[in-house]
Figure (cartoon, rainbow, N blue to C red):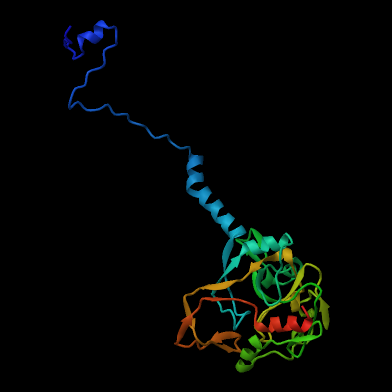
Length: 291
């Protein structure tokens, strides 16, 4: 029996065998297309996608990984200059708060001033549109850690009866002609001048606290532990690890002691990027202390 083609193109033998005929193919006929209508997001979902996710991601990065902080003022001259930006690795702070490692003498740290000090000194607090007040971050260098006995005399710092070689900053201030050796804060561990802490010739740093000082040794160059006391670990945001901005800076920058401001930047430029390790004087101090 021959396989006869029916009008629809299926072999007749297949139909006789009880098999279902297959649909015919028409060469050149366009394939059927399915149009998918995109699902419309709710306003809340759009807000989360466009604003919520980026904000949360940025907060997680800046709170737990690293953040960038701008230096305002000259309290850390000559080692940090006004408007420089520093990177602060935040994960270090969280580890230290959990008991893993610790900040060390010589580290430059970003922190909030003590609450008692901010309540008394207007320059240690700020406000947001008059709605609420807050403690702005400061940046200083750790001079003493818990248990250290701090003494300051004639502008020189003594830690546990060992002198700290402060030439990493005092050499500059001697050249500028305004190294403070005579004021109260240059001859006491703490001064009662601002009504926050008592006059003390020597201070022992409490547990979980740090004694911090600015590198600016001009008579009114820095508000620090000499005027507002020690800083608890809970108020420390982190360690300044490196300067990342601007790309370049003047090679030399002088200081006008009378006007209390920087002057005469040189025309020659140098790279501003640099890491911020503790000066060698702190390693030498630890060797003297037997640590």
